[in-house]
Image (cartoon, rainbow over all chains, first blue to last red; front, side, top):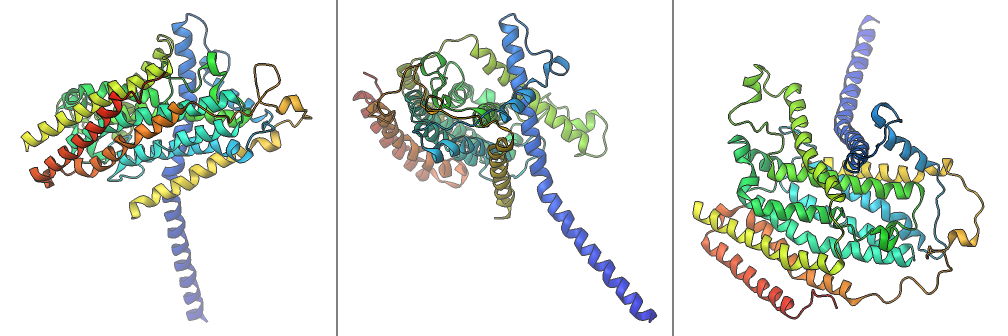
Length: 363
Length: 118
């Protein structure tokens, strides 16, 4: 009897060990994904607040200040309000296209966050084609806008959807050529490798100095991709009411709202990663572990500093795009297309050829 | 292929988040009575006329046609750009010839005014 009892206990022990290992493995797969999505959600709330505060400052008026401390919970309150609003579907619209459009926009942008390195090797998945994945996925979002515009069966929505598609494909080519030049310099399409390639000489190692024209073209194309003023023709409040969003109410409108800020945030993150050194501290020849006398080289402290540096650099471009909104007038559609096809495209192509020449000579 | 596993899981979770947001208002949102004016398309306050999906300006279609030239140019440039030290000058000059041909096509379109508005 003693032998049997011991054997049964051993079996139970090993069984429990295997179960625990399996559960641990599952948790380890899902935890970073959920943390990333939570971080993105909080960042959208922060950016909405940021936009309202900066807009208020530029226009010398009071921004949100009653909901929570400094009004930081205003975006959360607005989102909760949208939950209680009625879901309207236009009587002659296409229900499926109308419903799926906002989802496609949000999903395609959320996936792009998986290749952003927020710290040193602090990335959900270090693909060797990271920037290529982002470019491919960012081509999908306008399909959602076009579906929404068409599915609404509204004249304003339809024009808004057409404009969104035309604008997106026009500015995608200059954007992609600039990314191509960065890949040429870094010998890699991986975002982690691109950040590493800029880490040798502090801020003098940034791709900003080696690609000044590429940086400007990338910045303009990013604004156009995000449909921020002066490139907000797909919405164009004075002309199209709200463009492709005209017929939307409640949470579906909220999804479009979230998608636009997600798009703005990821564009700013990519400017930081491609041109401003990513999470590097960027002070020449000072390394974090030596400076703070930390024996553990890649501990939690270094990761937090990396995240902070990345977000601090990203904030600069968020501020730039928000300030641009209240300082520049909107372009006409012909000016928009001419800028994209006749100005940015030749410049970015010339920049690529210049980069190619310098790479060939340096090899 | 294991490095794409997080991407696939991430895709599923993003899909779930989006669908949850779409489905969440159903128990909360008010469902007051509907009437024809409420569900009709917005048209500056008067009754909508005609179908919104009417014939549209051909220029929007033309922009998509214009897109076809630079898009394969970019697509073929990516595998060429990443390993430059693995391609001899012959490979580089082949890409130059490719870009030259496409640039000539783009200049022709420019000359013909394809990207101009009326």
